[in-house]
Image (cartoon, rainbow, N blue to C red; front, side, top):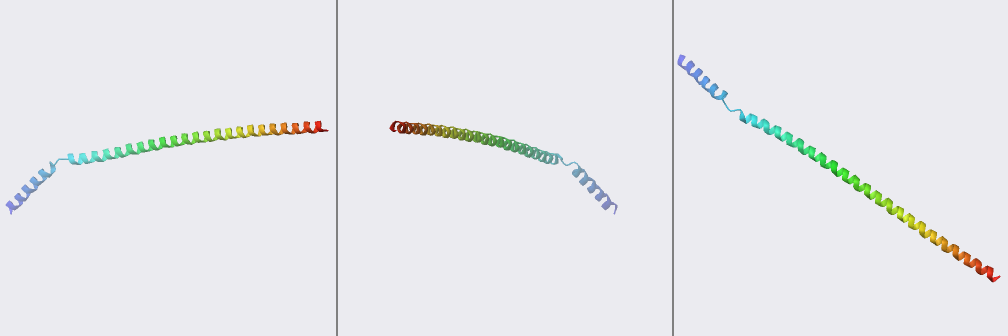
Length: 107
């Protein structure tokens, strides 16, 4: 019985010494990989937010330019319409004056 007990203690001591000396680098490398993945994901999210902000700014600038162009075009159209109306009114006034002079001469 002593031999069985001593043999069991010897086997237990050997198994504990082998398992307690195992390499912990794998656990460290897994932790580092998780940290690196988290950092990369954070960086990628930050880059995506920056890109979205740039796109919004460009879209706002383009919309502002379009509004300015439309306002200029509308102003030019109004100016042209005013000029055309003025010319037409001048021509109508000239025609009325000519007709009035004809009527005065005819009497």
